[in-house]
Image 1 (cartoon, rainbow, N blue to C red):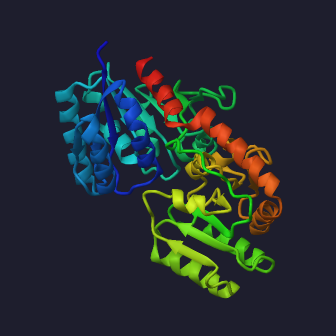
Image 2: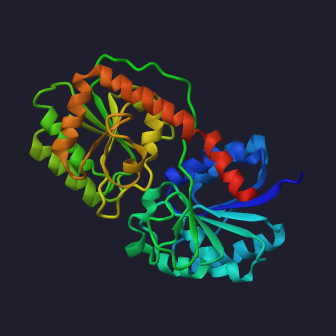
Image 3: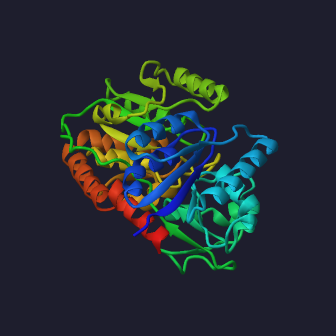
Length: 377
């Protein structure tokens, strides 16, 4: 059987979980599809290039830049590429890619399937994109959380495959829930002796709740002298960096919070942590639409603590495979971490149950299967 020709269109200036998720899926997808990529970000392009050495798929470098002229140039290049290569399917993985196809889909063969991944609430011209692509594209989401804020962010709510009665549909579109994923890793022993590192992973911005985690550490430091907060990720703005350092200074916990630049492999940080925390809030551009760091922690047998909103609210069963606290509640976060410090047996139970959930639903193999089934449907 001939492989379907699939273009994964992921043009964006930044690099994050959306790009990493696709990179994890590529080996599995390439076994079933004739893949091509259109990208802009240099990190994403480099990582795909390494993978392509063994799998032999083309990577097209499109026009960089954020101006409307740059986007139009990308759109023209994409249109030419689609006409030349005659793809059976296109998967857009970014806001800018979705906007490009909102502009050009009128000129494409109607037989080409278009899938649009919606991964966050920061999309520019979202209403224009979904108005243009109505009835033409299938909307994919990393979790059900994406529809929580859909009405005010994107307009009329489409049907949702896994929760069809939750929202009315006026446009007869559907969202199919595709979880983010992480490479499965070799099983790691979880050290039950209390470690002192509380770990937060991800870009350091105002909706990730880093300030809440800092306040929680300040509270815990009164009783646990060795506790530290490790934050791994790059700052979005100098203003927010200054805000966090002023908070650290005002709480008198200088040295208790350690910032690290983004790294390609966070496994060492996870392995040395007591737990992984996702403290994101449903304001300032949040919440998390999935919570990929939770899956990464589960894959390595680490317990997780997360705010009860967005994707983590759907991922975690409280006290079964993780602990939830109310968004913005630093005392609630501190109490959850305290519980883990003082109860090694609970840490082990949460870690085991999280690992089982990861293996059952969130390995690259499981997620790839679901995406392949959709494309071949």
